[in-house]
Structures are given as C-alpha cells and as structure tokens.
Length: 311
Image 1 (spheres, one colour):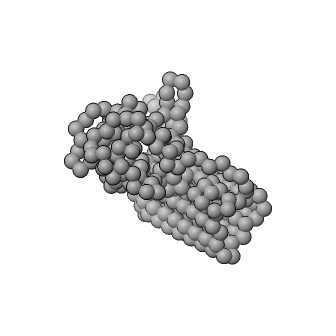
Image 2 (tube, rainbow, N blue to C red; image 1 turned 180 degrees about the vertical axis):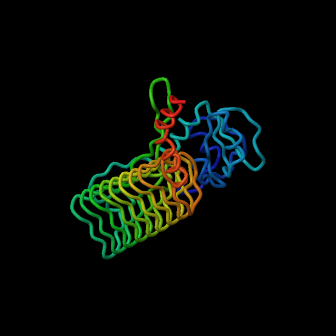
Image 3 (tube, helix red, strand yellow; image 1 turned 90 degrees about the horizontal axis):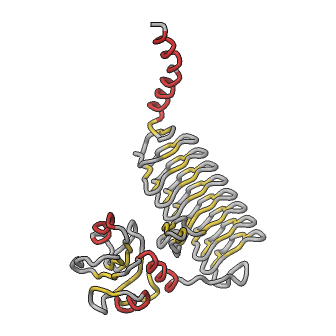
C-alpha cells in the first residue's frame, strides 16, 4: 500500500510511538508484506527466523522487535510489538469508512455496465465498461473491475484476509487494507468469495473463468485464461500462472506456485509448488499417471497379504 503522500521516518515513529534508526527525514512511501514489499516501503518482522529475510528484502524501512545493525541505505523502526504497530499504521493511513448507501457516490461505473438489484458497491470501487453484476453481489471498498466482466449472484469481493497472530487472549487479526483487482473478460460464478490483499492486491487476470462457490485467499494471483471449477479452495499468497486448470474441489496450501498450463484433477490437494505443463492428481498432488499407478498397487495389497499367508 502506497501512502497518498510521502511520509518521513520520524512521523511514522511518532504515529506508533517507537524508536527509530536513521535520519528523521528518511522518506517513507508506503508499507507492504514481505513477499510484495518494494523500495521505500515498510515491512514488519517479529520472529528471529525471519529477521535476515526482512533486513535483506526490498523493504527500505524494517519494523522490528530487536536492536540490530541497520543495513546500509535503510532505516529501522524498533518496536516491542511490530504486528500491533503495523496494524496501527494500516488503520491510520487507510481508516475504515462506514457505508451510508448501497452504492457509494465515489464509485466509478463504466458505460454499458448493468448493475442488477441489491448489489452493494463500496467506496472507491471502479467498474469498467459492459460488465454485468448480478443481484446480491458485494464489492468491498477499493475493488477494481475491468471491462466485459460478469459476476454472478451472491459473489463477495474484498472481504478481509484470513491472517491472524495467536496471542494468549485469542487471535489478533492483521488489518487488511489491500484490494481485489479483476482484469478484463473475467467470469466469476455465483457465491464466490475473493479476499482482498493484506497490503497489496488479490488479482484475477484477463480472461480467467471461475465457477460457482470458489474461494480465493488474500494476495493470490490467478493467471491469464485460467479455469477454476466449483468448490475449489485457494489459500493466500498463491501464484497460479497462465492457462492453469483446477477441477472441482481442488485445495491448495499457501505460498506456492502452480506453473503455466498445469491441470489439477478433481479433489486433489496441492501441498507444494508444481511445474507447469503437466497433469496432477491426489493428495499430495503428484503427476497423474504416477499417482494412478500407486493407487492400483494399493488395491493389490489384500491380494499380496493373502499370498504371503499361504507361503
């Protein structure tokens, strides 16, 4: 998330009430998660396992809970609870605005677009030309939709990321202030749910088609002309490259990549990144031919046990 105007290090430190290392006027352009952070932005880290990754990332400002040597050309924000303070910044620069009408006055709707009854359109939503938005669709604040997009009834775009920190008193959510971006010629089925990015975008690229009752987690990218069948569940931070096919009830873990033109057969579970151009099946998903051979061998186990008893 980029700020509306450039901030400085001292101002950011004052907002969250922490110490800093660096010039007070050090420029701060925005904030982001580590997998999408860019130069000039803040990233937070609160676990020793990830200190080096954060300090050596693209981030220029690191919000951290340990006194460490500041990398050259960067700045530090020293906090006793970086997760809490990252949330403070999210709320400060992107405060929640309650809706006072079903179609926000600042929403932009393109020529030829049809909005059916009972559609909710939040603040700063942009909808392109010649779209059809069917009844009871919910478009949360900041959602961006391209041209020639069809969204069927009951779909919800822009709900918060499923991202929590476990604390002794319960689960503490990471505040979501990213967007959902739907490119041109996308089709989204009835009752689909597509969560916003935490600080970046969840993106459905040009020409992708999504069946009914599909869930897509935060910061995931669905590639050009991909096809996702009903009841698939895609976790956060997944990269689905171009022209991938996921058949019904496929589920994935987070933070993986599915390569271009891969095909995942129905009810498979994807637990690691998969190369493109192959067909996969099963849990954990493996190349389909190998998996089917394994299943055929498993079916022979009772027969083989019976033979060993007769030896």
